Image (cartoon, rainbow, N blue to C red):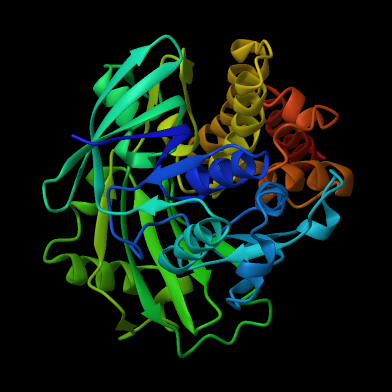
Length: 415
C-alpha cells in the first residue's frame, strides 16, 4: 500500500474544506483534499449570507464565483398572509459585506473545488476515508477509491470538512443528537416562468404557510427557482401520494405560491430531506479539527449552513497554520468558543422562528429602524458582532422584544 505525505489532509471538497485548504496552502503548506463524491453533485444550502464573503475573499474565490454569473442577493423577505417584512443588507447594523449570492450548489461547490485545485491543491474525488490512526497530532489515513484501490495519507494535521458525511465523528463515536426538533423538507427546482415580482430575484423569500411550517423561495439567475416546504414530519402526512403529488398539492394550498407555481415545470422530482440536525461533543482533538456542517447543522430557515462552514474553516485554517509553526493554540478559547457563539446565536433565531417569537417581531405594525437593522445583521450572518445586542443577548433579547410588542398592542387595544 502506497503512503503519501502532506502537511494537512482535508476531508471534503465543499465550501468548508476548500476554504480551509486554500488558506493553509497560501501559507506555504502542502495540502491534499479527499472527497467521497464526484463533482458536480447536488446539495441544498443555496442562499448565502454576506458574512461568508469575507471567508471566500480570503480564500481567493471571489473572482471565480463572480465569473459564474450567479444571482446577486441583497436581502431577505418574510411573508405571512398579507404582511411582509423585508430586510435589506445595506441597512444592517454591522459594517461589512452587504450583498452575496444565491447559487446552485452543484455549480458553486465545483467552482470552489476547481479554483483551489488550480492553486495547486490536489482534489481526489470518489475517495472514501475508511480509517484514521493518530500518533499524537500526526496521523495516517486509509482511503479507498471508486475502483477499490487503497492507499494511505500521512499528515501532520487533519481538517474534517466532510459535512453530512461526518467522517471523524462517526469513526470515533463523537456524534450526539441536536436539541432541535426533527423536521422534514420537501423541495424541488422549478422553471419559474411567472417570476415578475418587483423585488425579485435579488432576495430569498420565506413564507409562513402555517405555524411551524414555512416555504423557501430562492430565485437563481437562470430563471430556475428553488422552492421547498419545511415543517414537522407529521404535517406532510395530510398530503398523500407521490412526492410530486404532495408538492403540487402544497403549492396549491398556499396563496402566495398558488398562481405563480401552478402547473410549474420541475427540473427534478421533488426530494425529501429530514432529521438533519446533529452535533458533536467537541469540534477538535489532537491532530484534527471539525469545520462546517460536520460540527453542527441547524436548519435551513436562516441560510446559516454555508456561512458557518466558511467562517469555521477560515478560523480553523489560521489556527492550523499556527499549530504547524509550533505555536501554542488554545482550541477551546480560539476555536470552540467562537464557533459555538455563531452556532448558538443562529440556534436562538431558529428556535424563535418555530416558536412564533419572530412572527410577533417581523410582522408587528411598528418597526424601530435601529432594532430592525440589528436583527438584519444577524440575518446577514454577522453573528460574532458583540456590539449588537441581538447577538450578545441572543438567547433573551428576542423574547424581551416580542413581549414588549405584545404589551404595546394590549395597551393600544385598551385605549
